[in-house]
Image (cartoon, rainbow, N blue to C red):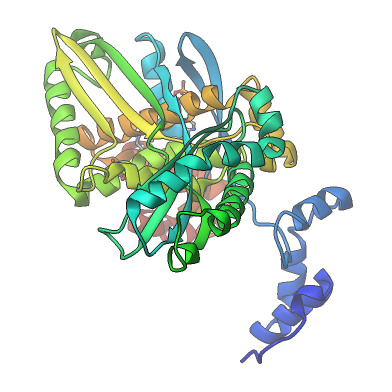
Amino acid sequence: MASNIKGFSKWTKEEKLKWIATTYFSDATEVVPLIKTYWNSDEDLQKLHDEFIENTITNFYLPFGVAPNFVINDRNYTLPMVIEESSVVAAASKSAKFWLERGGFKASVLDVEKIGQVHFIYKGDFKKLARFIDSIQNQFFSDTELLTQNMRKRGGGILKIELRDKTLALENYYQLHVTFDTKDSMGANFINTCLEQIAATLKEQVLVYTEFNEVERELAVVMSILSNYVPNCCVRASVSCAVADLASSEIANPEEFVAKFIQAVRIAEVEPFRAVTHNKGIMNGVDALVLATGNDFRAVEAGVHAYAARNGSYSSLSHAKVEDGIFTFWLDLPLALGTVGGLTSLHPMVKIALKLLGNPNAEDLMKIVAVAGLAQNFAALKSLTTTGIQQGHMKMHLKNILNQFKATDDERKNAVLHFEKNIVSHAAVVELLESLRK
Ligand code: HMG
């Protein structure tokens, strides 16, 4: 077992790797070379990756795939997708192709407000507190002027600073709820820096506000931090066509297809167990794009799921209807994304992904990401309500199972031919390989 270790962070990469290998692996002589095969031979590139995080010992690859044929607001895109799960890229591509022939996807940004909060404790008269915050509003803005000047030049900045009384939820708890527009950046650093200045102003001004008594002057800031819940930084993606136009080689009866499809969406609207899986399918597309473009998928995930539960029960992010013979399928997603700052200007593959998308601004990226989520959801629901999910998913997963059993090129060819006519399952692949290897 590893003993407590001091000063680990100061060791070289080689030293850290050696310690990991000898402490946790009985076969250190095999493990070290294996881990090192994931180092990039270009030392500058490797150094760049090493410094993205701390205590880096190697790289961890994820596939970077592409899904062509997306038409979004009449413009053609090929989407970069970084994801480990088979069938996601295929499903996105299949949806894109299906909707390409039916007018493509539409997307629009509903709003772009981001939120940060200064959380504080105050024991005193609320009206007095409200007067105090009112009286220092200008001070908040003037004290953050230097920090916000570039953002204001771009048309963004701090939009609003509101006092919120949260004492019903927690004794003596109040907050400054601050609204920002961070234009093409995700804005986390900008927001947090502004909030810390706002908190400093609050602490300074409270000491000189003459109306406060001793106890009220003890107002204490607990923390200042952005919120990853951004219900007002929201984008809508949709597809729509006449029900009859849904007919295809796979959809013989569009009315029947639509009725079942809408029923599947309704189930996800009312049943949280189903909604979580339904939304996971949406996030297959969203996360793949978010990762490829160097954005923060944890922030997006947390915010999206909070949004899915905003009415008190976890529910579907997407909705579907038929009106006057027109089928519409859409979703709204809160997405705080950036196309400048963070990894976007550092990671070479992120730069490629953004270039592939035509170097979108943040609003355009929000639209593209929401469309990826909708496309994914359409593909999954189409499969679920027709063939079932396993047929397509396992067809794509076949390669992974073959890799697991180190299949030779000949065995692969045989397997592909065999499973054109047979259902793929783990057991069926094992059985085939065993019979081929006899
Ligand atoms: P298929 O009809 O067997 O595919 O679909 P096909 O071979 O006839 O090809 C049709 C098109 O699909 C292709 O057109 C591609 O666009 C795409 P083409 O390029 O030939 O002109 N396609 C591919 N693209 C790249 N590489 C491939 C590939 N194969 C097809 N190898 C497919 C097969 C898997 C696409 C279909 O069955 C499907 O969409 N299934 C849904 C899969 C899915 O949703 N996967 C996500 C993982 S499951 C999950 O996590 C979510 C879930 O639980 C969510 C929920 O419950 O709601 C399901």
